[in-house]
Image 1 (tube, rainbow, N blue to C red):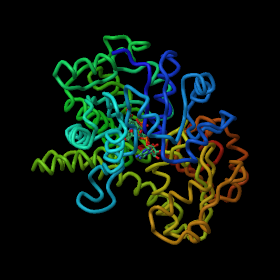
Image 2 (tube, helix red, strand yellow):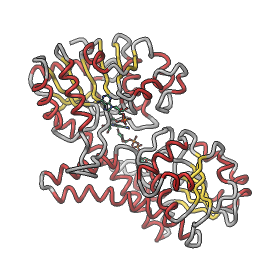
Image 3 (cartoon, rainbow, N blue to C red):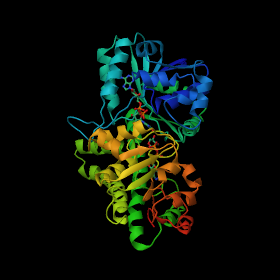
Image 4 (tube, rainbow, N blue to C red):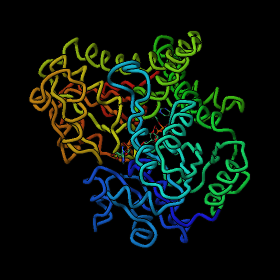
Length: 463
Ligand code: NAD
Ligand code: UDX
């Protein structure tokens, strides 16, 4: 089947960038990205392409070239479903906050709603592609809903998980390590796989397009995220031991990373991993394992999360201890709020939890992040429900200018590794701070020797 019309349900961090790249690489395919969130769609359609809702290097240029030609953003979900041959489901699958599996299982209510809507609207055969990260065997539930509530048309379900990382999404999409497509082994299933392979083959070498059964594809996504997060927790665990032994985590990471069996990537010690995926997907893996009675498997992976929570908590504890066991009434400046550099996404960012701890200790936080608004910061803190919104507002203030944010602070804490932080005039910052001036570098971003020579009491992770 030659695909000429695609719909993507969900205009978020995955749906938006992924469809923009497909549109750029496949000028003959019309792509409509739909979402229930009217503001989000309005922002995607904003005349000024710099106002699109997601900050991702290179994204706005691609949107500028494709939008209105073969890439469209709309709230008319039914129309887009009706017109398309292939539908990506790219909606959010957060951790459940209620009922059975609360705090662990993936909440599949948005996925089910999509399936029911597709079934209701579809008047001809469709390929439905799971782009969202889903528990293994979700395709079974999707198929049951589609087949039992539809208008008698045929649905083929594919699993095509997304491996992009935020901040490098466009590069990851343009040049993926692999594209994974899982489908049924039946002739119809294989035909559907080939139709999607042909879309990606417009720019991805065919040998990098991997075909598997549906269950392997679904489970590979959870496995990849679990392995990646495990590396971060492993290096962070060693960082604490380094601090006790005068070993240096950067040196240890370099030494082990040169072993080709280990590899050098993803060994950066930090204040803890954040982002919308790692924690959610591991908790989901733990939940699934427990559901099958695999308690040792569940406990093994849960430890990755326990270690990460510990790493965030010990960062804030160390700030309090170092500042003479009290931060009450003290101004502490955060540089960075996003969960990593080059994104405006703050979901599960370590900064949120460190701020929460310090506000519990009655600190006043001044914040600068180049891409995150005060509104977002407050909404992240309010979501924790630790205290009232007005208390949060009293204790955290965003600044437009990093130097203003640092003025009269007792300490600066680096929570995100934005490149620009390295180039600041640190002497000027030092001169404007209270003394002794402390820097807690949660990203090992700055030059320790330089910072100490200026006069800072400088502490990083794992040394
Ligand atoms: P997101 O929250 O940014 O976007 C999801 C969008 O879906 C929202 O705008 C929401 O309004 C919309 N939506 C929800 N239900 C809908 C419905 N019934 N009809 C229409 N629109 C609906 O989420 P995201 O970060 O893009 O993640 C989407 C999926 O991709 C998740 O399963 C996630 O685990 C997975 N994933 C995310 C990343 C990442 O880096 N963010 C990477 C790989 C995979
Ligand atoms: C992750 C996966 O990398 C990606 O393949 C998947 O599709 C979605 O989840 P993302 O969460 O966007 O991507 O970013 P990633 O680069 O993986 O970073 C996740 C968190 O780990 C960030 O907070 C980052 O700062 C932290 N991290 C990463 C470290 O602390 N050290 C590292 O060495 C690497």
